[in-house]
Length: 500
Image (cartoon, rainbow, N blue to C red; front, side, top):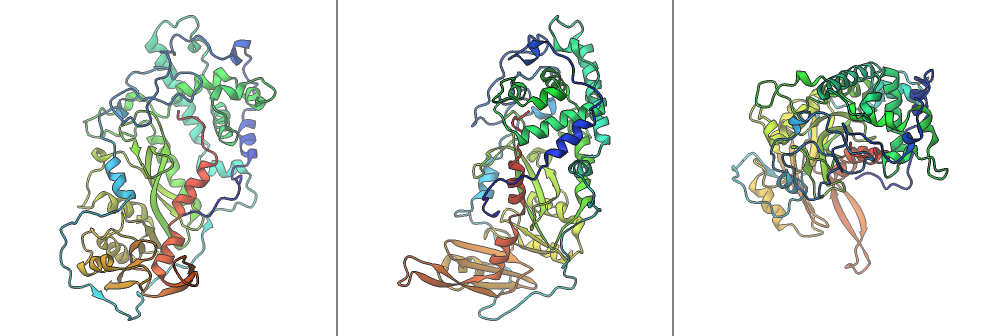
């Protein structure tokens, strides 16, 4: 788990926003009538009535792409088929997540007896490593004279703004052509083509909304002296912001492959951004020895076929990502979107959890790094594969996994609080069961059978203290597994205030 947060630190420098806005400083903000700052505008082409609310417990179903009612203006129905990719039936993945998050009384599985596992007793043992990795994490570019905006452009290259402007303008033209004669008060009558510089200003305002949070978008343009943010109206009018936001596009809709045909991609709408941004992480940063693989959830309340429900997480509904990070600082090294069971085709006989780890760590094969994961991913088969790739592995494990020996399951069931841990080994793979506050089982190709001796508080003891033997594998897991949690914690500080 990440360290206790004492106070909110500022990781985003306001200078970043200032630099992006200055890119469009030569052009003044559009002049507006008083109605631009009012509560609403008449917009017959855009307004299809009040935004529909999605109950928090409603499972995803077949519907138009639907947003939560955070935004001040209802989302326009610009293109009835725009979100067809996100509308097909899909059961929520509740059962998968419950299994992932809780492992109480796992159902017995069909186990194969493996005579290669041996009980270690009090014998000391440590795995052998040929090419251990001992370098510290580091940037792969010279940042001595970088300003905050330079770091931003390192991960979101400037040519993307040109692409955003081109695709948004294209979609605006397609929309106006499709609607034909516009009604008198339609905002589309005021549409003028956007530019790369204006898209920078638009993006800067979105970043600013994470720095200065408000309940609704329109409040950023309030003229009230107490709650107003005058910088917003100085660089872009409210109506212009909302018009760009409603027309924002990353790809030409006409290039979409229909569902059910070869080449269909459920992430078609955002794939150009993914393809351009994702490689920048590896190009910018070399991680240290320890990596952690886990899932992350981007909050989303609308209707989406692959929206996930994670009952054990603070944010329960959203889009699930598989993420690998540097354990020491939480830097995101790579990620992929989980798009549901129907879009996760089995490759090479691997299950989903095994495939996720292999895909995210492939770049580091042969490096001697250590990969930490929880019991959703861990299995003897995966650990042996990673070991053959000169990657160490450590993590909690479900005793119902194929390949876990019966002697290890029996030892876990018989373990009593305060007793020494029980160790087992198969080649360079070590397993340990231990009962402290609860039973825990860990696999590792990194750690040996050593223990750390600690004194902890115990109300049931006569002295109020007791000595415990903590396996070094458990100690290492606790220290290195929190990379993705640390990433989530830091991203939450600057969460964009709406779900649109």
